[in-house]
Length: 257
Image 1 (cartoon, helix red, strand yellow):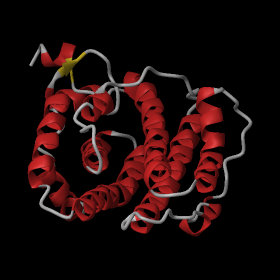
Image 2 (cartoon, one colour):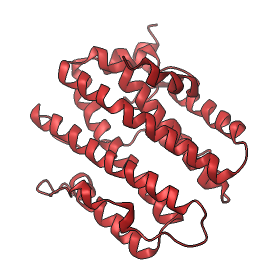
Image 3 (cartoon, one colour):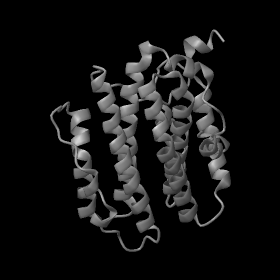
């Protein structure tokens, strides 16, 4: 039922998720790690969007407002404060932020990223609720190398750096969408419905990132998109011992294939 939604995603990505990753991710003994890292990924996605808004688009006071939105989530994850109250998403509005003058696409960046931030924080809470209902305690996991590997592609001058970050954001969101769809059929009914429910927002996130990159560049970026896509493919297809939501093909399974 969601194949039409996935069609542009699959055309955008340069490779599918390896079967070896799906085979490992669907095992019950790996569910805890999968959910914990998924939770982390939702926070990191919100933080990445916030960083771009703060760096490129809003004034200092608005930057502080963004940091206040993030604080309860960061306290939960990094300071292990478990009795925090997560903010109502209704307070997270682009109208609360002051866009800097001199950046033509500032308002568009703020509008798209604030919507993404709200949704990622909501998804964080949803994953956390599922974990708690199953007696899965949140634990700190070492970060995967996927995002870091992509960020090595970022050029060192502007606006090229921003354009590259937006393209990378598009690939991360597209890959997340593709993995949710491929993994969902192998999960229990609750997780299946949850992962399918995420597809539409993840697909829109990828489109928003790519549209911003194209608008800010003001020229054809297809070659840059292709180069970063090839790097993303390398990271997804490589053999990797550490299992994470965006990790490559598990070494022990790949070796048996």
